[in-house]
Image (cartoon, rainbow, N blue to C red; front, side, top):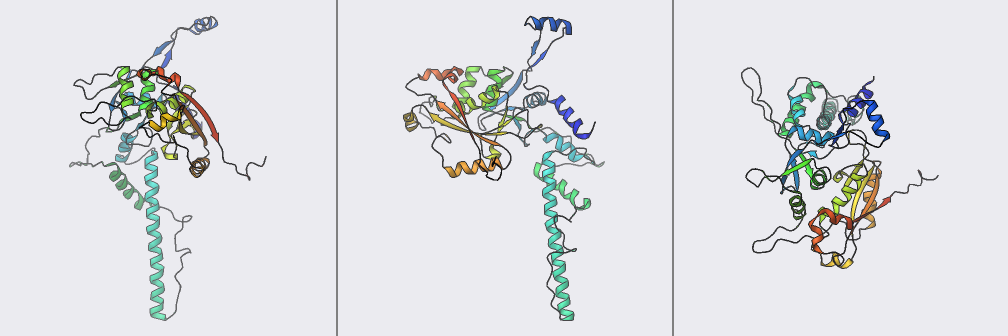
Length: 395
């Protein structure tokens, strides 16, 4: 098996479960076949029962144990490491940084290595140009001939000919990585270092946390403000996540009432819509959109679709009297749409405008917002936007 095939096999093994819930059946194949003909099954649902802490300042849920973090990431790609780009890999990077040889580099290390190499290339090129200029000046002073310093040639390194030197790159790379991560090592007389402590946690968005707690019942959200970190009930989670997007209550003023155009409700409606269709939904801030849709997950393929959430009020008067400033609720300009579409088309992503219809206040009572049953009154409509490129779309 070649290297690529072995890697795909390993990824398929590690990320075999699409959701944190798994099913097990200890019966024989014959028994399962007979029960399958009858439409029955003896499979048992295995619930991992993960735990997380709600953090109001970041509007997220922190999963601090390594066991729960691995389960939620490997089974559905939920959350991201707060010290990593996606998968929590800070501790692995620190361990590899302390080793004399690195078997496998993470994406963050590869990025830092490229930055250091580009920096070293610029320094070497500037030094070579300065050397040629000094030689031309010496010839002018000694021989009186005017020699124009060459900016290109065998003595001037270019992007195609320059090769990094291990002796120059590796020490500076280690220094850059240690400074970036803020890790200071204390050496003793034998050259040992202090034991590492995993300082990273998995950070879930409110939509991800509510999906795990409400739909899958595999996440318990704890309240760190209580004395014993008491778990929040589902009604408490529902109200807490909505109030997280409301205006901060002022002293001697009543708490803000729940609104139908709450950003949490609007974005969760889109998140739940695509998660229920089997897509892996991740944050799309890198590509100036709200969500990215992966068929299986970030470790398998790139995202195929980029989602922009566009709230639409069923009653236009609700938008005029609302004190919530929803992003993309007002008509956007064509220049903005063209910019977003072009940016995602260049990276082979299809732009989708997800229009979320917000129910009218006159049609529903405010008591409807007291439970997740209110999502029955929200609807999601999709509009695909493509760039017309004459050279590619003549057929």
